[in-house]
Structures are given as structure tokens and as C-alpha cells.
Length: 195
Image 1: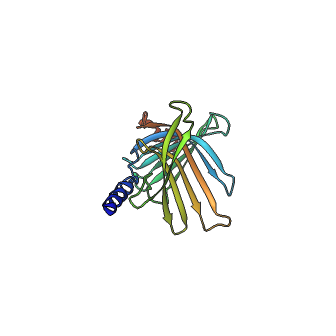
Image 2: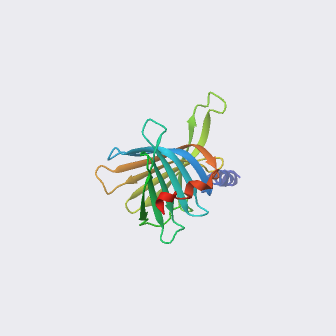
Image 3: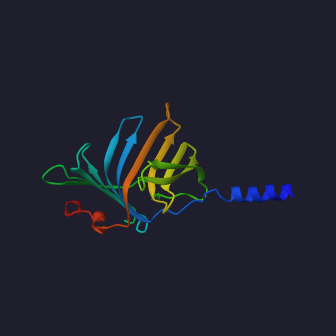
């Protein structure tokens, strides 16, 4: 009888491990990026569209909300193309280049390992926190940790640890004020300066 109870308890406990979730196919958020080895920092607004394999970024001048760069990356073009539009001058300047790497969706993979659950914010105030899960992927040259909300699998943070550098380089991307969907699809349309 005891063995039966213990085996049932084991099944219940094992079945409670979170399963990889599906992140939204389209979303936008305010972001900031940090490269801890070089001190590189970026902030702005990020637009993600996995349905059409494209992203757009509006980069802000650090500390301000004024845009200094607009980046449109289109993997659905032939060849995949990136447009960097310098918007800090009166006449916008567009630089067009080929994207040298394949589309990489923001997703929790089927082989990703659940690392743990966390609470961001304060549970002392109703609605002032969000429950998140952390997932890990291992690569030849490092590890990636992705943090997503428990409800909706919305991206919150990505951390890449490169073990080919000494010390290990850590790059972080943080997303907040997330919006599901793309409210304005024109963010992916290069301006006339890029023709």
C-alpha cells in the first residue's frame, strides 16, 4: 500500500513540471540590451513578427525618448535584408545590408530545460507582480536562458552566456510593457530614403 501511495505521489510531482510553452507569434515591447563584457547598452522599442519572419527596432538616445536609429530586419526578403535608418539628423540616412544569419525565432524549444519559477515585482500589492518561468538551452559555445510569463508565455528576458571568452561574456535583453500583436504593421516598411 505504501509503495502504491509513493508511486502515485511521484507521478503527481513529476507531472507538475512545466512544459515548453509557445510564445506569441507577434508582439512588441520596450527593450534594453546590455553586453557586460563591452559595456554596450541600447534601449528602445522592439517589434517581433514570426508570421512574416521580420523584426523592427526603434533605438532611443540613452536617457531620452528621442529616436536616433530605426532598424528593420526582413528575413522574408530575397536576400534577407536589414535597413538601418539614422533619424538623428534632419535628412534621414539609410544603410542597406544583407543579413548574414538565418531567422531565429524567439521561442522556448522542445528540448529546453525548465530551470525554475520566479516572481517579478511585489506580491504585497495586488497586481504588482508577474509569475515567470526560466528555461535553459545549451549550445557548443554557451548557454541561453529565456524568461517568459507563466500565463501567455510572453517574453520578459533573454540572457546569453558565451563561454568562449574569459571572463564569460553575458548579453542580456529585457522586455517590458509588452503588447501582443503588431498595432502598426508600417513599422516594417522601409522609408523612401531606403529605395
